Length: 99
Image (cartoon, rainbow, N blue to C red; front, side, top):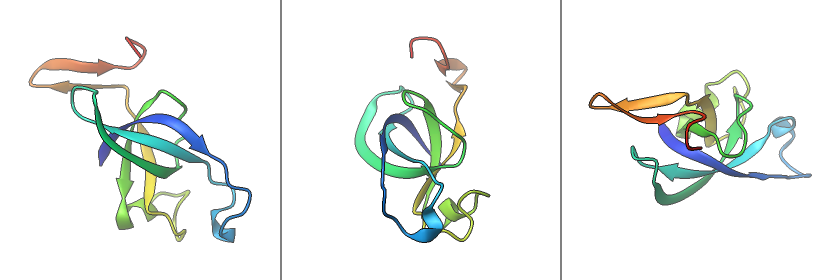
């Protein structure tokens, strides 16, 4: 799983039939301090995440193991919205604080 921030959406009017109904999000990878690591990915959204939220995403074969992406040709999926994280006893991120 990788931490990322939702920075946008992708709209596709034509796509593989099995992908119909999925929302696609543009994610920017972040480190444990919440800083961008420079990488971006487009991921299917399995949890109704929105712009500005911090999420966890999986890629590769793991991306096809959610209810919404089962047996679909996905290479990345948002599977969790992060409420907070802590490193070495210090809160590094808390949803709604300094978002």
